[in-house]
Length: 458
Ligand SMILES: *Cc1c(COP(=O)(O)O)cnc(C)c1O
Image 1 (cartoon, rainbow, N blue to C red):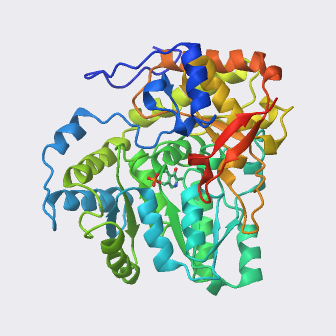
Image 2 (image 1 turned 45 degrees about the vertical axis):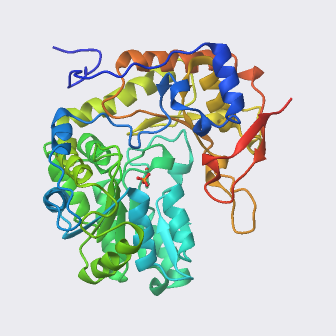
Image 3 (image 1 turned 180 degrees about the vertical axis):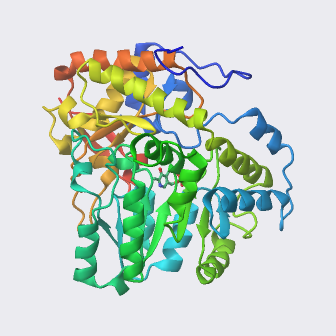
């Protein structure tokens, strides 16, 4: 029997009531928060679409795993479960747990990048680029041009442009490129996937020049689903088979377990190269902890290992992607400008088109996120000029994409919640002309989007 949408492939065993608020309370709250949704208290939020990071609902199986945490300082049984999951599902030889994804990025950047190096990537990610730059590297964007245009439909908009990689090799020399950073999916492009063919070709080109390929594996399961759906030859493969093949084109990966490993905290660095692994174990003890726990409790590693097995279930990931698409389709039908095609973890509002009367240096996406909260209690996130930060000369980066991200947590909200979100965005779209820009009144030196503060312009 066909249904309008695939209903949740799980049932509810525990509930968490959410606080309801009035418009007036929200008007005061967002002002107090400096028009930055990161600075709201979670209790002031009705539907929290700030991020899909660490906001997952764990399963009964994961919670029961928490009870068998082996909290030994060294050689915890849960570490071996995690190691087994990484080897079996992703195919890497070595794993170094870290407290979250950026812990792995820190270690990888420090062991692989020398000052003066270049690190090409398919669009930047905030923490990834920050670690690369702190290690003395320069990030170079090598994503296909289509990714920078929110309206171009492309089945694999996260793909790397091989000509851009070749041009960089010709310009700076392969010995100045320690690795290519390949993200699956590409968060800042709108959760856009990379095709298997592209991964294969990137690996071939990199190998020819002795350059490694390191994946940002954060949303690898979502990427695998899109491959199954869209790429010839993969329709009859399982998600697990696709994931395994994807990682066969990588020399290593950083993972934020808070996304596709279905946990609230955790991450890891996975490697095949023994030499790099040795270096990683030397650093992890300084920054995270023993190589057999890396800043995590035994129970956290157990939950992550179990989450990894659950994540490759076809019906889990099908429901997730379809729920995101349901929200996006509703907005599209109402004429709201969003990034196309709809990505894996979020719907991205195109704030540049939505608030076309606000210039980019008056932070249209920041204001759109603030206004959406104010009218509905729905919390979203700016992904535009504020997130992009400043270059070495201190000027704003002016990214082509000026977006508001409505990120859907895994296994948390229902289709009814998606309807509430869609109705609020559509209402705001109808009165978009009355929304003013912002000025920045406080700015921290790095990763400014987390704590900067704003005031509305007259
Ligand atoms: C979340 C994320 C990271 C960083 O992971 P944390 O667990 O938040 O430290 C890195 N890359 C991408 C693409 C992410 O979405």
